[in-house]
Amino acid sequence: MASIKRGLPRLAVAAVLAALLGAPAHAQTSGKTIKFIPQADLRVLDPIWTTAYITRNYGYMVYDTLFALDEHLHPQPEMVGSYKVSDDKLTYTFTLRDHLKFTDGMPVRSADCIASLARWMKRDALGQAMAQAVGEMKPVDDRTFSIVLKKPFPLLLDAIGKLSSNVPFIMPERVAKTDANTQITDPTGSGPFKFLKDEWVPGSKAVFVKNPDYVPRSEPPSWAAGGKVVKVDRVEWDYIPDPATAAAALNAGEVDWWEQLPPDLVPMLRRNQDVVVADTDPLGSVGVARFNSLLPPFNNVKMRQALLYIVNQTDIMTSVAGDPENWKACYSVYTCGTPMASDAGAAPLMGKPDPAKAKALIKEAGYNGERIVLLTATDQPSINAQANVVADEMRQIGLNVDLQAMDWGTLINRRASKAPIDKGGWNMFFTWFGGADMLNPSLNFPLNTVGEKGWFGWASDDKIVALREQWMQASDAAAQKQIATAIQEEAFSSVPFIPTGQFIMPTAFRKSLKGVVPAPVVFLWNVEKD
Image 1: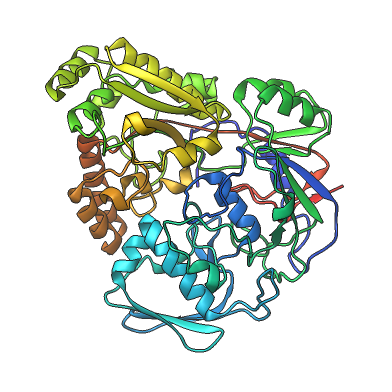
Image 2 (image 1 turned 135 degrees about the vertical axis):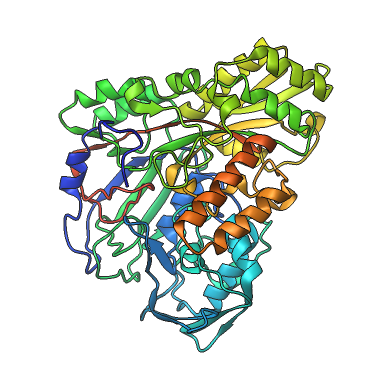
């Protein structure tokens, strides 16, 4: 997949590629401790309940998946050893690999896989679409199960091999039977690491150790696919919210890896000959302004449309990523530079800001100075920058903005509230998605406009729902493109969210680390420490 911007420097990606695949994936080997600064504080241990990337990353440490996406965007068998599809494409039969165990020592069974998929399908946008096609999921024996469809679902393997939030991780049946709207707290996993819950200190530290019972595949790693060989004994996530403190710790060798660094610190870290600064994500990231469509004033479409005329991607991205080499305007609801992207319907966002048009729409909506609560996370620079720029733009057209600051861990719990404003509710928040989450209508969960069953903000647009279903059944790329364009045009009419631009977020690690896997998600397997 091409870079997010033609000619965009890859920030020493050659060094990463040179370190890639330091050893073939055959068996677990012993190693040392990696001290890692994660992008946010780990507060939630349920990667199905939340779409937060910090919890997704935790999920990849402690769980495995039936299929996984490789660097060619193809789903590959992971926990599955073999599978077959009936001639009518209605029955998929999967047999698990030998010797798969959970971290409590119990074998992974068909019943665990079925329960895990069933819970995931209740929360994930693509999973919900898959659920409409599934007639039944049933075990054949302890290691083999089948998914029988009521109608063809061409994206089935793509769905169960989904790269990013929500990832269909495999959990024990007893855990996976937890109601999908209730957070799980049991960290019993199926993956390459074990989570030491007794050492977890929210706001400070999360600790993982190598799972000695995990059996990796023999293939080399490729994004989330292939062999997940753990080459260290222990990984410590040390949460350091202050960027200057984090940079000093990496420079001094007190930590080994800083997952995401703000652009203003890149020059300083690149001067350290013992540090590699790299952009390991070939798809980049997409900023998003998300409305709460349940509460006034953004339950009125004219209020949402009004902001299209004042949101300025150049101002936002300059604040988020600095140098224009690190960002570009992206007037699409899909990741720019990928097949589904276009600027169809985006004229209000693309043009010069038009405060007069915005004010006219606000007047038509009947807005009368009510308080508008915007949530921001001060420990997420890319989020906080978006929030402050847009809050200022909103105030300039007379909106009564209450910008409420908190850490990301608090925000991801707060945004789940549907309460009114006077009881802790909210009107708008800002986030970003890895480009892998915004590639097309099936993956883009802000476009899952099914109301209160959808993603935080709970947008409702039946036309988009119907078009998404058509996209998933489309027989060729040309038909998919046509439908994706129609979805985008409708999205810029009903405005479930506003894209705020596309940018890169560099990572940095000490040169003592080898084997970093370039991918849209930071993976800790295959990494060894000298």
